[in-house]
Amino acid sequence: DGGMYTVIGIAKEAFKGNTDITAIEFPKTLKNIGQYAFSGCSSLAGELEIPSGVITIGGHAFENCSNLTGELKIPDEVTAIGADAFLNCKGFTGGLKIPEKITKIESGTFEGCSGFDGELTIPESVTTIGGGAFRGCKNLTGELKLHDGITSIGNYAFEDCSGFKGELRIPSGLTVINQTAFEGCSGFTGTLVIPANI
Image (tube, rainbow, N blue to C red; front, side, top):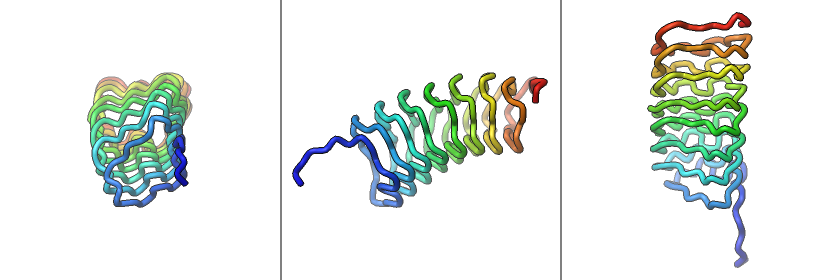
């Protein structure tokens, strides 16, 4: 109607399955990206630039957007990323830094993102890593640093993450190591340290 509007959110399934979109330029006013917002947008290519004001990224938001490339930079302001948000986004490269306001990495969040080829940084704010969270991220490198504040690591969480090197130290806050949590992680060397309370 000729009016001007400030976009602060992208609603659930807003562009789901739209194969005509080749790139996204987000407004700086954006705060929230809804569930399935760009799921299946298979023609999306190039770098994904999420503006610094974004607080939440919904589940499945960029699921199966497999032509995205470059480093995935998640803004420090993000407090929640939904399950399967970046499932099968195979083209990302570089490292992956989880924002320090995140307390839970949901199930399948980065599953199948096999292109990451740098270090994974998990902040001390994280207490829970969901099932399959990093499953198939086979090119992540460096040491996997799991701090003692982590109390839960789900099934398949790091399955087939074969690029990690160095010792694997299980967090002292864990009481259970779930099935196939580290299956196929063939790069670890040195002593496997399992705390007494497991």
